[in-house]
Image (cartoon, rainbow, N blue to C red; front, side, top):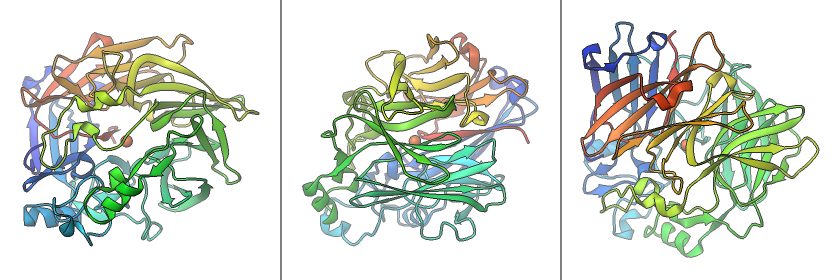
Length: 472
Ligand SMILES: [Fe+2]
């Protein structure tokens, strides 16, 4: 993640590919987003603040792969590329060690680096506290902040967006945080019209990165935050960063989930069996009136060293996340008439980046996939991919572990056309020592057999989230 890698357009010939790209995937593409440029001038930006770098990995009908990549042309990217240094503050990065130079920098910059989804005639590159950026799906050129005809004008949304496949709706969530937190969920139809808008005020300051969607509810993690007054003061005067100004509030008796009725009405708060700081959700669905939610949760959490960030003058240290302890994936059941949930651990492995059949959002799905660690004490950095069969009460799992020193990215599920429980998994593998990236493709239900195709790529910067776009 040194210098900016710049735009890419190259083709990997079938002769370079180990195995072959499955016929069922040809014509489709994997999309990926992440911080492509973090060493900016003489400072290293926190990965949350690195510039969004969109990657399109098209699996072509002749068995080749076409890789294209482009930076999102946000104002801060354009300014920092021209200046050759950090110009705007980020969530976890200051522009200078001298606090007076960090003053009056305004809100953190939107670097559009976290998610990428296809909606209508554009790709949407999401970031945590701004509008998504619209990207041309063919040229990858940046069109600008996407406000959906003015609906989102002046409104920040979460990077994570959900799609209600059955109703063909895109869901965007805005979070307004003060002493209390107000969530606004907007459901947008295929014509870009808001067909439902739901506002839900919840007591206290909450950390929210993701949410789940069932036919009746939006599901939020009850992740209480507290301000660290001294750190907030440091942030405000330009010495510290905003990311360090808050911390999870561990004084709460136990974890909770907040269930926001999609049709409006009072929020249901349900208690969990133990502390849980939920960053990513898998699926949610309803069965006989009970709500079932799959979620990845930490028991304790601190901000600041994500992805091994050691500060503006340090190198990334991939062992840092191990200090934080693993996050675990639970199947949470909220009974119809109770505000007390139960949960089952789905695997002994630590899991993040939960993914499943994209058409099954909000209804029962047979498989859950995630990035994991062979060593059950840890979760990230990930070296394995896990697939959990949710139909069997014993939750049998399949695990594939990458070679030594290879990190595994978010596994995307590309569904088969003709079977609900079949498809492929695509994941980017990064070998920092060999300085290569590989796209590995697996048969989803035979993960443990290893990849059916390994496609060699140039070393790509780390990615956060992606999406599978099937053949048109
Ligand atoms: Fe995320």
